[in-house]
Each structure stands twice: as structure tokens, then as C-alpha cells.
Length: 308
Ligand code: UT7
Image 1 (spheres, helix red, strand yellow):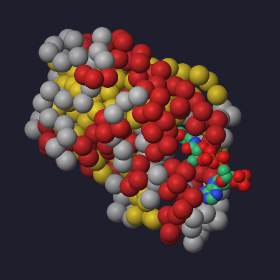
Image 2: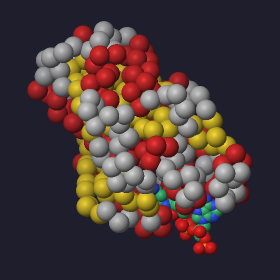
Image 3: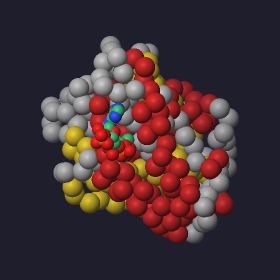
Image 4: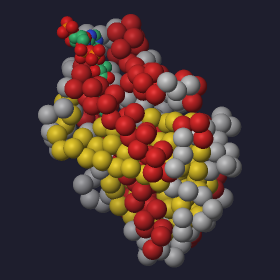
């Protein structure tokens, strides 16, 4: 088995939308500050949704679009740092809800905002040694659970949501990834049961350093150039970070997908939400090649060459 092929995508966003104007009535901020510093205009915030309910809806949609039977799924991985329970994992709840087979691994993976790229890589490894052809890789977060809504430096940045892909083991499609870690509990941390703390400018520096390097390394490993990529999907944390990367790589701006305006930073869910949005807009079809790049808490990072 050489690589992976994406055969279905799905997403689920909480129905409750909170605009910058609404937030600025709650905390000392403004639409002008949030929009100009981050690009974010609004975010979805969960009310009665749970992490597992969003993950299940996104995954169900991905399975339907893939047109496959749950019996054919060989692994289910949910990337998240905000599960409903320490145990059972969100992935175990999906096994029940989606009626996935019992003889497959289902587990959550925490690599913060890089989790989806880590998840794809683990899925590929599991498919290579398994007997079923498909894996479900989901990113699902209720970031609002971790936010202190009195801390304007963090609460305006994040949002909730879930995205999912079904990947198929394939000899005719390539998959390459580069993963990295640098242990650091000062730039970005969230104690269990506590609130998220971030040194924003530290993380900004880290992101603008690691993203271009990670893109280069992933392309080198795949033996490809940026010209051969249809879209680059960076973790959606801040429009200014993506604009920096475009400039640094002297890349065409339109190749870098951007939707942070509508969702804020949804951590591990941001890349699969973007992939599903792109697929439903008709931007992705058989033969498409996408470079996914994540970075975030840990610190962690990861790039993946992904084909449709
Ligand atoms: O997925 C996890 C990865 N996380 C990230 O990628 C986040 C990376 N970092 C960032 O995106 C940016 O650093 C932020 C958007 C978090 C902050 O932008 P910044 O341009 O680095 O602002 P700053 O932290 O340097 O703050 C500038 C000013 C400060 O006021 P003073 O000290 O200059 O008077 C802050 O107190 O902006 C103030 N400020 C705010 N003002 C209005 C901070 N948050 C807010 C706010 N509204 N929400």
C-alpha cells in the first residue's frame, strides 16, 4: 500500500453563531480589533451540542458521501483536546453511534491543533497492517469549554466544530507526512479542567517560523513542488499567520484556503472543516492534491500531502 485517497468529507458546526459585536458586549474588545488582528468575524459556540454529537454528524456525512458501509471501516481516530469524557473516548462513542465494527481500533488522539495531520498519519499506518480498506479521521473540538470569557486575549480567537474525512488505502495515491514536537508548557497550555492560557506573540512567532519550514519539508519528502499542489490548507488560527506564509514562500495567495473568518480557531477541527467546505464548493475532486499543515499546542506541527 502506497498511500491514501480521500473518498468522503463531512462537517458539523454548532447552530449558535456569536459575532464579534456580540462578544464585545461581553468582554473589553471590538470588532475592529478582532477582525484586524486575526481576520475572525464570527465563531460557532456549542450550546446543546457535545463533542461526540458533532463528531458523529460530521463522520456520518463523510461516510454517506463516501458511499461506504460502516463494516468496511478499519480504524476510527478522533483528534481532539476537548473530549466529553476522559473515558470513553469520543471515538468509542462514534463506534457505537455509527455502528462501526467491534474488531477495529477507535481512539482519540491529542496533538492539539496539529491533531488532524497526526491522525491521518496514524490512520495510514493502521490501514497498512489491517484488513479493511477505509479509516475515519475526525477533528472535533468544543474549545469554548476551555475559554475564560473574561480573558479577551484568548476568548475572541476560538470556536467549536467538527470535520471528518474517510480515507481509503490506495496503491495509486500518494501520502506523505512530516510531524514534529517541541515540549513547551509556557507558550500555550490548558490544564485538565482549567482554562486555556496563551502567550499570543510567542505562538505567532512559532507559527510563522514552523509553517514555511513544514511546507518545504513535506514537499521535499513527497518529491513535489508547490506548483503541483492545488491547495494549501493551513490550520486556521489567524489570517495574518497565513498571509505571512504566503509572502515568505512567494506563493499565490489563492492557493491558500482561508475560512477563519467564519469559524475562528477550531483547533484540530479546522483543517477537516476546511476540506469539507472546499469539497462541497466543488474545489476538490478526483485527482486533487492538497497540502495540509497544522501547528499548535504541545508545541506540535505536521504537514501532509493528501490526494483525492
Ligand atoms: O491554534 C493555536 C495557535 N494559536 C495561535 O496561532 C495564536 C497566535 N497568535 C496570534 O494570533 C496573535 O498573537 C494574537 C491574535 C493572539 C494577538 O495579536 P497581537 O497582534 O500579537 O496582539 P498582542 O497580544 O501583542 O496585544 C496587543 C494589544 C495589547 O494591548 P497593549 O498592551 O498594546 O496596550 C493587548 O492587551 O492588544 C490588546 N488586546 C486586545 N484588545 C482588544 C489583546 N486582546 C485584545 C482583544 N481586544 N480581544
